[in-house]
Amino acid sequence: MFFHIKKLSKNLSVDPKDYGPQLTETIKRKLTMEVENTCSEKHGFILKAFNIDIERLEGRINPTGMHPGGTAVFKVPYDAIVFKPFRGEVLNAIVKTSAQQGLFAFCGPLQVFIAKTNLSNEDNKLLWNADASPPCWMSEDQRIIIRDGSQLRVRIIGIRMSSDLTTSAVGTILDDYLGPIDS
Image (cartoon, rainbow, N blue to C red; front, top):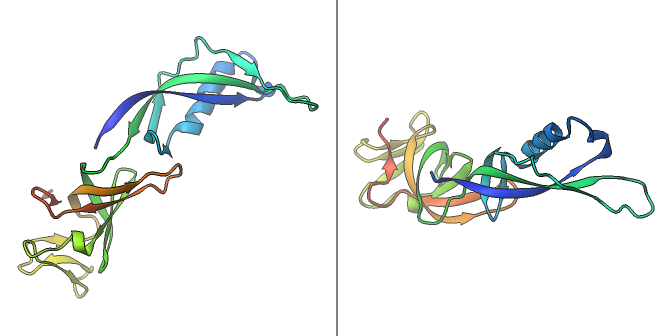
């Protein structure tokens, strides 16, 4: 997996009730809650926020019009550990669900679907074996078995990034050095 450290910033709104000696701790806590374990199309999965720069914070009071408010907006710079997979990347995955149409595997927070056309060919001769307990993908000579919990090395052939956590990818094991990983 490719993890990167990115310098990011976020505009945080802080209510007047949070002003006071604990303002910096409130900003740190609020930033962590808002950005960690989220996904953005631009940066990918934001896994961890750290090095939150609260030393030089400058807030701006939002104009509220006719209603009294006093909410301040702070631009908070921070570093983040991000995971943004890309097309062609090779990742290790764990099979979550296997079915006759293919299987779903997870590479960290990324869900990867491997269709049966990207799972089986004339070289590995994988077939869906519904009679096995539990049902699994198995080669004719039974040397290769892929079932729930199996570890695979997959290549990403397509990815759809979205701002919510429904980011998904399509993968294949039909290439050299891809497929089940002996554990």
